[in-house]
Image (tube, rainbow, N blue to C red; front, side, top):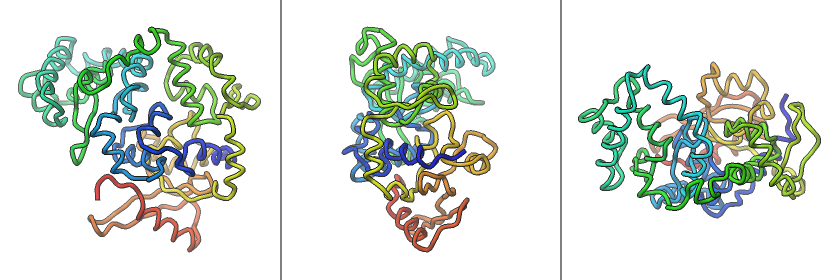
Length: 363
């Protein structure tokens, strides 16, 4: 069932009410990673946690190589600080890499095709970033081809192995870049943690609990798909840095950063603020169970058919109270709401202001 107290605590921990980070790169680094399938939404999620709230600053961090998107875990796209991409991917991407290799025969691909795609990518990108369409055109011309899902598979496989990553903004998307030329050197699991996995897990766990807590290690296990045995060993290294409560219904205590509950109390009614969030924001996707912020019927409306495609959410008092989108042409955009709970005229005025101020990456 929805838990408004927990939801408001998580809103504060995630910086959505206080915007405590000076830059997007600082915000994303504090999280470890932010969900990134929907690129405009990922850029907005980073902006909504920064002091200025400016999406232009997020794009500047992309263009400067401070932020990139990769496939570090769960076989999906995340926005990350550049210095974290290699070691986190090496730590967490093993299951996705194995699943990718197992699927290749279904696509008519083998390791030689991946080798050829890698070779062609190096040739094309040695001169600098290029669009995904340019890379796919090169694979169609001289490589294994991109039809019937092959292109997406090859690209994700090369990102999983940190040969490639998504780099600068090109006006409508991110270009593809060679990781060896775009990412900072000496940032592998071996470089950062002497190849030791448990201290690396502890680093990522620390960031997760600081930015998502109150949360359990099972939440973190769902988020990363790391094994619980490894996570429990890592918890022993960081547990003293956090406050915690008694075991929850899943048998695990929740952990949160020191002082969080006092901060929530000091904010008072501010924790009931209305928010317009992107569809894949960490407030919704950062936990194993989303029903702390909505009931089952509302969840079904947020993710129709449970198909993994999340609508943008309206949050009030820590509760998801509707979905939203924008319609119309540039210069004549309108806010369209699907409400789970009605709003007052004053709340309606707040929604219009939030819509006007929302960090759109495109007009």
